[in-house]
Image (cartoon, rainbow, N blue to C red; front, side, top):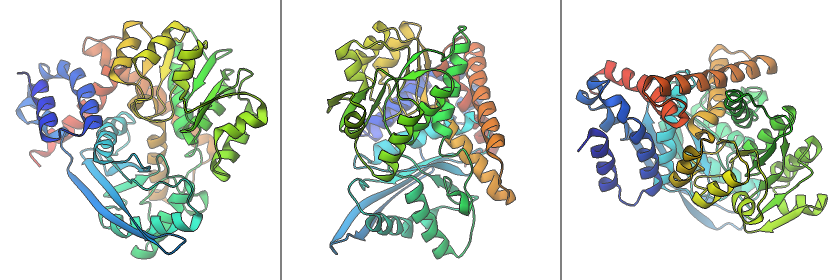
Length: 451
């Protein structure tokens, strides 16, 4: 049995119920087969076995009191996966679907994503099965404070720097950071995604969505194309989707879809800047549902369906797909429908939104396919830039941060293509992203010895 198959087999045997983690490990490891012969030093040092095992995993109880004075109990997680090239870095997700498998898959992906940015950041992830939907600001504050009462023991500006993710936006980061500051009696860059008033960075809210579009533009350019006059399908309606729409508009494309967990809206006229502002107010301030967008703008709304199901069932033409919602939202049938309906490019704003079968469809049909660890790395890249600003006690201009973000995304695109070419898989962004991210981390691990 090869080293790669042995590692995959061991992960599946040791953690048989962690299906999302298995999927992430398999997707990465299969592309690393090309590195085994070229780097026998990695095999000898057990790098492949070590990189799939978190350095440490914390699971903890989070008791808090709701507005009716009832005690509620949730489960918290922080998986510190690998800090070979810098402090642990990765978001916090508050969503009822959160479990150990999902946090481990996200943390594992974060290793390679952070490596690709060229910034000194390791990989980690955390969160809770707490559901912010329907909760008052007071309840969310009390939960965040209870969560931080345990998390503060494990994080720090030179140790582990969390950020936001699904369910953790500016409001939650403020509550988390405020309580950390109170407990530790220090004002340090221990969280990113902070408000501008207390150490945040310009462009950070926009970064993941902007970066995804920047990466897609680089892919399109390899075939002499751009966003101008293209029909673009975006899933989700949160932070990533909102700013992906904004940047697509700036580049001359037309976004025709949004969705949340309750429905999908198709707007054939396009979601222009005014409509995008409405979505931001609807989702970020009023915490409403996308069906309200449909009511306001008299568009078609499909209840209990995601964007990709609607595109498949309705035969909607799409040039570019930007999945920005959650993992495994595009299955094989949806991928086949996208190809049939004219899609030429898929760039993932979410983490692992395409199933393995969907990815095979994209590859077999020569679709430009940017995996999440490359295409959505703009968020953590700008978090890294926020860390730099915090360390130097400086704030950079919007133009400077956006320029750095654009250059980082161009650099990631170039690294993916160069690694894919060097290891015999030209044009394969998945292999290129995995290999480029892995080799840098592996070399650092090798330098440290067995630790």
